[in-house]
Every structure is written in structure tokens, then in C-alpha cells.
Length: 416
Image (cartoon, rainbow, N blue to C red; front, side):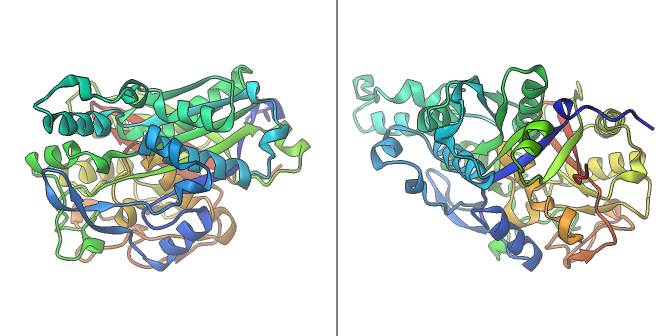
């Protein structure tokens, strides 16, 4: 048995702030996951026309003024909303905190494309006269913008940066927050991921060129991981920021604890620009299990990365089989089937949707599986209906990104 870590070396989640295409807080998000309610809709994109996308409907004016919205970015607004909600959910009074000891670490897939596209479109109206480029353009497109907007809005003076980690960004933002807490660089970390990707045409056009942009007569059925007739990715926006702190501090103030981060890993495929590598993915899961000091049989839920592409889903299923076999205690689900692919926010949002399982012992299903692909068949793949289980002590969260970036986070049900 592993020696028990001191409370200063144990990192816990005490606040969750999120916006997803089907919910603007954890309770609403979870309710819709259990009810099978999708958030995918028709959406008009410049140059593309009507596409299918996951669109968030949070109120940005809850924490920002109209002037701030005009000056800032959509990703910044998403990050501000989620960070403010995380602080509120953690029952902390921002005015009473030492803001120099708070860090903001936000994973992203990309940043700046939305405003670059807008600026080019605008100056086209003036025969590409660059004197019409907005003086706000530079601070909008710098890579640290979403995290930086959070610090401006909340008066945080501790470290902030974004982590360009493709679709693994949400996990990697959370891991960075954990590491900065362990290093003693901060006392509170706002960590997770955000995406504004739907507000530019590039991702849609590129996925379509690859033959990997999802289509369906019914938008809510467009994202179909594991289904034999799946046909690609649904591009979405969203965000999820966690308030993360050391266990000793959380216990001292009597905080509610959602879970303890006990394992994590990041590795690289070194294989292809877009194609996944099952061997590297399985190695990443094994590394995370080793760090947590547990075996594959201890995991109760695997939240898959599966995006609804044939190659991606099949590779991840192969990797899971290599690590877990058909272990009867492991239940497997997917969250993208409800909200599409929220890119830099995906890992953080998908983890959040599973955290309530520690308390209610319900595994939310993957929806839209009408004809299961045999390559994606598992003994305990939870599809179309929630599954009540005896216990949930460990959740493993997979998230993989282009250029072969893999990330895994393992959360344990908190018990002193």
C-alpha cells in the first residue's frame, strides 16, 4: 500500500464553473446529460453558410459590461464567466482573497483566428486598407488572451497563461494548475479550458475538406461516437474552469470537495499530424494509473475522447482494450455525443459531466448510438440510457489532440 500523502501534497477540486451547449452550470449540465438532451443546433458561419454546431447561451453580462464585451473576445467572455462561476461555486469571496496568490491556467486549441478573420473581412470593405484595422486587435489575438481577460476582470495579480494543447487543452490546463500548487507558486488555481472555435470558418472548412465534418438531418443526432454510421466531428464552443487547491487549505475552510486529482499523464505520438496512435494512448493511460498508484481494475468510469470519426474512435477503443481488456468493473461513456467537440474545453467539460457520479452512482450514457460499430464494442459501454452502478471511486478522463498530444487525468472520490 502506498504511503499516504500529506494534505499539502494532495490537490482537490472545490469549485466548478462551466458553460456548455446544453447547460450553463454543473447541475443543469448534468441534468441534461442524464436526460439525453443534446445542445447541437444549426448555425450560420461566414463563407460556409449553415452548419451544425454546439452553441453556448450563457449571459456574458452577468460578469462583464458591454464596453468590456466590445473590447474583448468570445473566448475571454467564456473564460470570465466560468472562472467567476467557479469562485462562486467554491463559496469564496474574491474581495477577501490574496489575488497575488491566485493563478489562471487555461487550455486552448487555438486563439486569434476569430478576430483575424473578422479584421480581414472588415478591411475588405475598404479595399484592404490596413488603417481600418482595430487598435484592439493585438490584445485580442495574443495567445494568453483568455486567461489574461480573466485576470483583468477579477483583479488577479498572480501568474496567468494559456496552454496551446489542441483538444487535450482542458486536461492540460488542470494539470498545470495542480503542478503550480504543488510547487507552492500559487494557493488557488483557476484551471481548465475554453473554446470560441465556432465563430470562425476555418475549423469547419478544414474538417469538411478532410471529409470529417459531421452532417445529419437532425442536428441533435449529428455527433455519433461509436455508431457504425458516424460521419465526423461537430465543432462546438464552451468552457469549464475549476477552482483547485491543496487539501489542507480546503479542509481548513470546510470546502465542499468534488474529487481529488490523483493521477495524470501527458505524452506524444510522434506519429502523424492528425491520425491517432493507439499504442501511445494506451501508454498515457498506464502512466496516469502508475502515478495514481492504482491498477486498471480500480477505475470505475472511463470518459472517452471519441469525437465521432472512424479512425479516432477505433484507435481509442483499441488503446482502452490494451489497458483494461473487458474488465467488468469499468464503465465507458462519452460526452461529445451531447455537446459536440468543444475543442480546448472538451477535457474539462467532459470531466465535469462525470463528477456527480461520485455521489449519485449513475453513469451518463453515450447517446445517438443506433448501430454500434463492432470495433467500439465493450462489455460495459453505456449507451442511450443511464446506468446505475454500485460504486464510483475513480474516474479516468481521456483527451487527445492533433499532432499527437495525449492527456489523461484520474480523479478519486474524496474520502479523508
